[in-house]
Length: 436
Image (cartoon, rainbow, N blue to C red):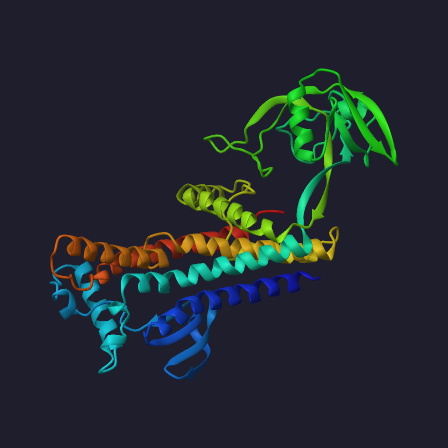
């Protein structure tokens, strides 16, 4: 698979994800009677469009999003009491209400979005993000069940000849002053499968590394299977500063952003990675774990943006775990597709995983309760519904529709911030890219 093929696969699936996201909004809106005047994939100049029924379907030049135009998103002036327009932000809200009202055809006021009940509004707004989650579920299901997920096995892949400091460069070679690695000194060889360690049967790489780290520098019996024969050896780990990793094998960082290290037992061996197919029953857990990891990243988004800006404009080396934009993800797809040292199955699995994570990111990001994101519209609908429920409990008259157009100034501000972050990501991905 060539570099260009990987990029094309990424672009096509990205466009499909955007299109399906908007379908997630459009279908329930139409089902609830709202007139949908436009369904567009992309922004900017229209490349192609066709009107079918009452909806114009089209493709625009910039494939960085899409939209469906729901008629009557904002309640008109008379429905919200014709608020004064004596400040710039109130004028923005008034203009948004009037522009929304102009889209409503005579006699079709009942088909306006603002007339929907709170549950229906929430359903329409959540339809897009939920569609991205469904896409991710399907892609991760294909990867887990069809190709398998990367799994470290207790079969030794490489044996270090020396103990290299944890803060050394990744390509650092052994020096005469470096102490010998315990694994090599004990006679471990690539291809050995660890059967037991300190008398305990070993079934996974994580179990083995946990045991080695806890051993300290005590001589410990280890049994390996080599060419069909079990060989008993004795290893004496060294206590060395090694990176602290989480349950997913990712480095844990301190408050300053530096990798944490701990003094633990160390042998100097690495595992063999295989693709292990999973049961379909494991897919929900995989999706849940990936979603939670994405939520954790989004929760630290402001700090990550600041770090990215500082790194980019100070010509520092970019952190491998920093934010990546569409350009960077597209480059990852191309590099994975053109890699010479991996199988086609691993390439396909990696590409699908990247696309699944992208869809989960869209799901999580769109739920942020700020307009113009879907989560902002959901929050406005829930506020309106809560206001009505309070009035009902207190025995008061049912309030009219809320003036969600008041959020338009916030939407403009958020749009500007997101645009600036998007430009920063494009610049960083082009001029200070992450190397994989």
